Each structure stands twice: as structure tokens, then as C-alpha cells.
Image 1: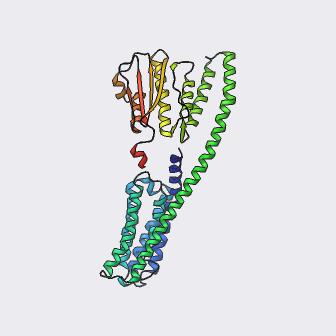
Image 2: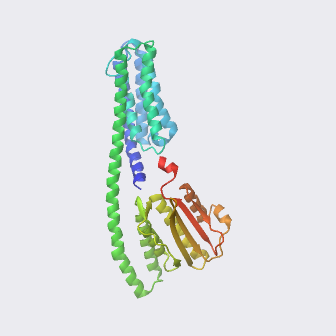
Image 3: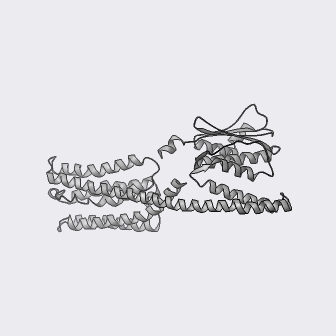
Length: 380
């Protein structure tokens, strides 16, 4: 939950950073047109000022709509390509002798800074290290290659110092982005801790007050009053929702709330003792969904009697639910309109599976899911 919230919050904050950084790049281009291009080179100044105008238009567009990072890989690649194209254009507009002639950095040395900061703080889910390393390598090598070409492979010490200083500025901008990402994560963690404390207080309130009142009313007017049943179901749903917001989901509580939801319509002849086992949130959500769906099937398609078993085996959680109904056709797992099809697909997305256990009376289903995540999830 915290990781999902972190990514969502970071994307919202990065949306505000992107137009600001595009505006910064526009200012840098204008400054370079004034400082790095000879006053007589009207064409060069016009080119850089035109590029600055394009950046300003892009900044306004991103501010009013969404950022390029949210639009997908093509737009991100387009923006990143400017880190190569625009410094190369600049190198052809200035006099070769003056390129990298100042120890502060090469022309447009600050141009990559804004984009690198956004790149560093944006919540990429995959290939983060590879992408960041590739971009930093390009930013470091391009000025060096330009210097080698302009100075016929014999750069001066000043040229090399200028190239190094430019990369240091870019690296510092990237590190600032990483710091911003840590600030985002810290803000999300504090927000989540406050939210979960509120949930715990509300959970305790439901347990100590609402449950007591419902139990008293059920004894007085009977357990089958529709309004009482609806209220109990609402309370159970709310409890489950709060339990499944945690990063470490307590399975015993999840199992108990699912059983409580069906207690008046279902007889469970066997129920496992889970103890203090907690699981990661995706596994907890899947097991809660599976238990609810399979118990519901026992009510709808069997005699209202079910048995539940749970175990852990070789790093996987295994949930088994059986009933005394007519059994299931294998085709039900291939019918996209059924809950069992959706449940099997969700299990397989997490590296597990849902199968029918052969040789058992009625419908006997086994759901397995890795406790510690799939390879794809661990690399995200």
C-alpha cells in the first residue's frame, strides 16, 4: 500500500516539476544565445531563441494537461533526446576554439539539470538503474566527444576540466532529484502512518461499540432481520477494507472477517488456525478475495456447508475450500464471465494458480500464491 501511495503521490508532484524544468531549460537556452553566441551570429541566436520558445510552449502545454512522463515512453524518449540534439546544435553554432574554453563548463552545461532532476525523482517501476545510468553516460560522454572532434583529438587541460565540471553539475542535479524522491517517500510514509492510526482507532470503535450493539439487537429481534444483516455486512466490508490497506496483512483477522460475513448462511465444518501470520498486501488481498468468492460459491451451488484449510509450503500460501455440491466443470475456469476465471487470472499474475483438486466430493478448490513475490515484482 505504501509503495502504491508513494508512486501515485510522486507522479502528482512530478507533474508540477516538469513544466517548471522545461521553463528552466528555456531560460538556459536564452542565456546561452546571449552569452555563448557572437553578437554578429544572428542565425545562431535565432535558433537558440526558437528552441527556447518551443520549450516554453511545451511547459505551458504540460502545465495545462499532463507531463511528458505521464504520456508514455515515446514522449519521455523525445524529451531525453533533446539532451543529445540541442547541445550538439549549440556546438555547431559557437566558434570551435571557444567551446569548452571556460572552467565553469561547456556551453549549455546546465541544460540537462532540470530533466535529470525529474528523471531521478520520478517513480519508475522497472529498469530504473539501466535508464538512469544510460542517460548519465550520454550526458558525460557527449561533451567529451565534441571536444575531441573540435580540437582534433588534442584537447587542452582547460577543455577537459570544462567537460568534467559540466558532468559534475549534471550529476549534482541528478542527486538532487534522488533527494526529492526521498522527501516524497518520507511524506508518504508519514501520511500513511497517520492514516493507519486513524483506521486502527476506527477499527477498535467498530469492534467495541458497533458489534456490541448489533449483537444485542440480534438477540432481541432475531438474527435474520434484513436490516441487521445488511448492517453486519457493511461493518465486515469496512473492517476488511481497513485490514487490506496494511502493508503486512494479518491473515487471522482477514479469515475471521470473511467467515463472519457468511455466518448466518454458511456452516463451516473445518477452519484453519492461522496464528500471527502476516503476508504482503497483494497476497492478503488475493486470499481474502478467494475466500470470499469460494465461500459464496458454497452457498449458491452447494448445501451451505464448507470446509476451509490453509497452510504454507515451500514459500507459498495454500488455501483450500471444499463443499458438498455437485462439483465444477473444468470449463468454468475458461469462461471469462465467471468469478473463478478472474480469480485464477489474479493468482497467476502473482505467480500462483487456482486448480480443482480431483477425487474429492463436491467442489474442492486449491489456491496457491508465493508469499514473497514473483521475480518481476522483486525487480520492480
